[in-house]
Length: 267
Image (cartoon, rainbow, N blue to C red):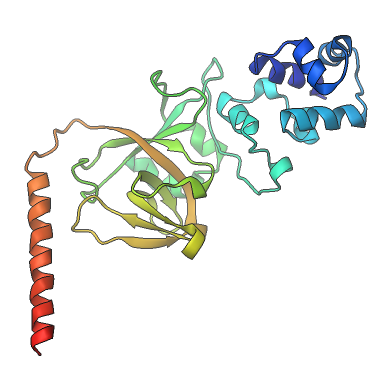
């Protein structure tokens, strides 16, 4: 049972003293100290319920899971209330890796691994085989992954660029107009701009930056993962004339639509 070490860890992460927590729980500091140092091996159900409510984690989590061995990302998710025992949600445990200091790695999904990622994204053994690196400028309590994109649908971001994404736990958090890396059932890894239609249509509208590509809807039940765009790396300099070309294409499209409208009115 990991109850003793868990409640001590959670208290310390909140930077609270034993006196402060004991006061909020309505127990003496010596009683709390007994729980934390392991003097009390079998806490009462009333005590378990009290600590569960205070830390907003289930009794199962506090008792069965050694939180000292959980990665920073996973622990932060628990502290934010993403505890499956509490919410009743069937949340998937994200397959992830950590370095020797128990810090979350940024796993890299190159082009050659994208096909395997489509089926192995939830397999810890597959994820362990991916290249990894650390990037200190990113937030340590969040989870990131890097994907190599292909094609010209997201120009001016060049073909074969490396896109860094932040893991999105709740699909409802997808914001209109933001770019994301999606793992979909049919297309695998795609990099697109999203419009959130989950509440109305139970789907997301995925659009490209390149106007030559039409938007398309993807049912939310066909989406396996979402990673919010943070940054990208490329060895290519974007074409300074690309923006001009995009504007010209839009003008041509508008002229074509106006011509069609005039023909319809004249007929």
